Amino acid sequence: MGDNIYLPQLARVIHVKEEVPGERSIKTFRLEFVNGGGFEHACGQCAMLSVFGRGESMISIASSPLVSGYKQFSIMRAGRVTSAFHDLAVGDVVGIRGPYGNSFPIDDWRGKNLVFIGGGCGLAPIWPVIQTAVTRRDDFKNITVFYGGRSARDIMYQAELEKLRSTAEVHLSVDNAEEGWHEFCGFVPANLMDKAPTHDNAIAITCGPPIMIKFVIKNLRALGFQDEQIYTTIENKMKCALGKCGRCNVGKDYVCIKGPVYSWADLKDLPPEY
Image (cartoon, rainbow, N blue to C red; front, side):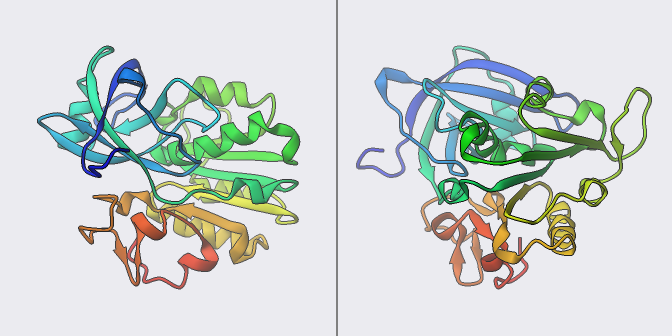
């Protein structure tokens, strides 16, 4: 990042994939920096993405830091900027500035069991941790992934999740039973309780809709996970990324400065505004 903290670098769209169709569609974009620019990032960090003339938005970086050549972002169509992104094609140029926020302390988790719990587009912020852990497979014990969507067509990263089964336990779910679905039917927190992963020598990482996170944490505590064993990210609170606008303020914290990654031991003491 240059001297002007508000000035984005230029990046070109090199890949677009539709993950989820419909009104709340999700597309995955891979961006390549123009003219040799770029930055390194850590798992859990975010970037501000700009569609020129339409605005900018904070988006989680969904590619592992071990991947070189591009940054990946999975974006749900939700407003002016995200809709503008969904209209982009390969070759279009956008702005990107970052990285922002803290990160998941994955190096501290060596030798532990990792349990990932995601819902909806919330799989994207924890996907870099999953991919990094799989790439560094010998550093960790069991890797278990819980992920759910409203329906089968709302499951993102479908091909990647199937490939992941060769190195990790993958438990998928949909909210209601539907024809052709042979895995768990019900909400993600219920699937978690059904499979009951052990808390022994484990770290749980969760992200998804706030109501899902609330009940995932409740269920993890019921399974014996301690507060310091549970991590989540609240990057949805971040707006300017620089601690200037105050939109991300939660109690005493500016999430873009102190977060967005928190252990439940730290997050539970903040006002429940997330």
